[in-house]
Image (cartoon, rainbow, N blue to C red):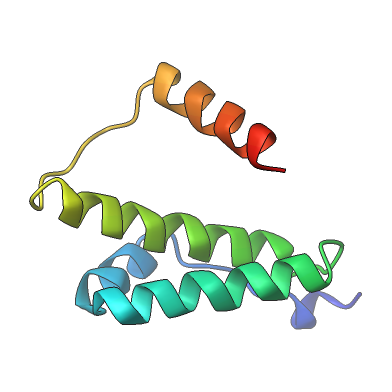
Length: 88
């Protein structure tokens, strides 16, 4: 696949964009990106869709904590991976 067809996420700007989105918009992006990824996981843009899901979910979690930021620990990452494996 040509390089120009692949989307690259801006890891600094995208979280800021998520902060300006409503909860409904974040949930829509998550659903849309998940559907796009699930339709073709071998797509060159699959990583972009997974990043979108991650940033939108992080923003929703930040809001659920009352707006506080939280740095994930290694245990949090392991628990998230395990939950994802069990979900499938």
